[in-house]
Image (cartoon, rainbow, N blue to C red; front, side, top):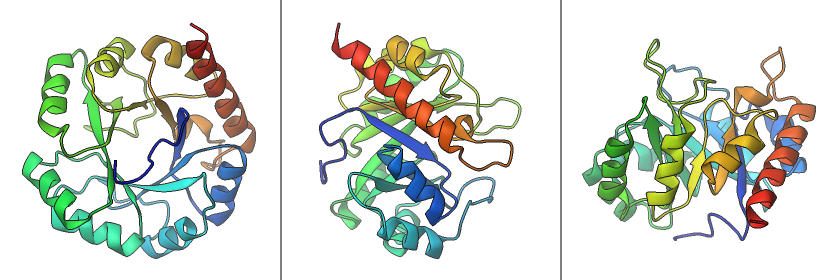
Length: 233
């Protein structure tokens, strides 16, 4: 890997960071990866690229920032990485393999997390995508497709965890589980899927749409319990 993406333990990611205050709270709660959606399909970014750069530059290890985007062109992705100063990019678009190869060459040292969108039982399709992209990425994230809206991830809905479990067993790279996770189901999801990491967004937000410190703390606690249960097997 170009960088130590997963430093010695299972990781917890929270996406949709809105400002410096929220970022500091997440880090204090033990969140490993903080996700910043930029240039996304809905166009509803939580903060500007310049603000994202400022917030990420202030993060203290072990917490690190991840830019989440639906861009598909290598040049545009590389430009975004340089503008924001990220070392980790999470790609939710249908990025052609040639573009992944070009991205690796144009931004040395960049860690790439590639989404695998679960649409019913499309295990064969996702395994094929793993086969084609494995030389150019460093981790995968399984997420949910919403047939009503067409959204690829960030749906707030769970998917068939058995599909993600099969991908975990097949992938040569670490897999993060996303899609409708919250403090009530994350430990169960971990036991069912056995991922290397988990990701939450709306599942740790209160009615105002901001991250709830109580929900985040409980999510981290339950996720750690889930991972520990796997270690004891």
